[in-house]
Length: 370
Image (cartoon, rainbow, N blue to C red):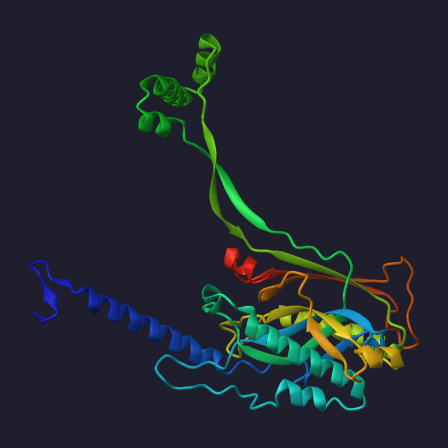
């Protein structure tokens, strides 16, 4: 008999049980990791090239102040097995997001705007979790930042809906027991007895309605003494509707790429052996206020004329935690008439997006601005 066996019944020690469970878990993770390791070729819409879209494309030339909603995209990190070996993502190393923005070329003002937004988003992310409770990442949180990103104008009708779930609970009988009031139990006991009789009557397909009859004769109905009992917090949903009116074929092509990019990252990737999905991307949504440079000498004298586009997170709108994109609805030609540019690209498209947060809110989140 093994030294790790105790008692006459041969019950393994708790530590051995836990060690065996951990070993089986690690073996299972390593097995799946090996099969999924060959995936990851689809972290960006265009292989090897970032897709960075701004709409409208003249956003960086807008008046002095502007408001945008910025979407950063995250994927699962290259898989590391629990046994210690590492499966390297076959896509290879990529440049940093800042390098990719600087390499856009031909749009200095736009790249400068995107660089300012990226710096502010990074700063906001560092300060987002100001409470120790919020510092712990989710078990499956995706941490590999995709090179793809989208910056769109601020849509109308932003809405934040909090869902706190309660249920009605009948505490009539238990309260009677706790308070020692036998008289309050009698209607409840009678009600249960009536229900039992009705249950027996169902065997003979006879409806006696005993409970209702008893209430009718006595003129008394038991007070259920219901209370609201907290159950949990529902995940928040965020809906955005963008009415896109491209002014050129170039902008219309950007609109098509916006739709394709959102749909691409909303879907999972199938690994080469077809046995598993690699989970969809997560989105970090940030409301950004932009302050543009001005040529007004008075404004330059009293501030705001530093020549740079300054991006700041909007502190007055609620923050949004990491989200999954759960619905993408695209409506072409919403004006009931087909209108296209010379190459057939549509002149009007409505895009509706629904995002669902990956974690439930708490007081800790609300204090932090969510």
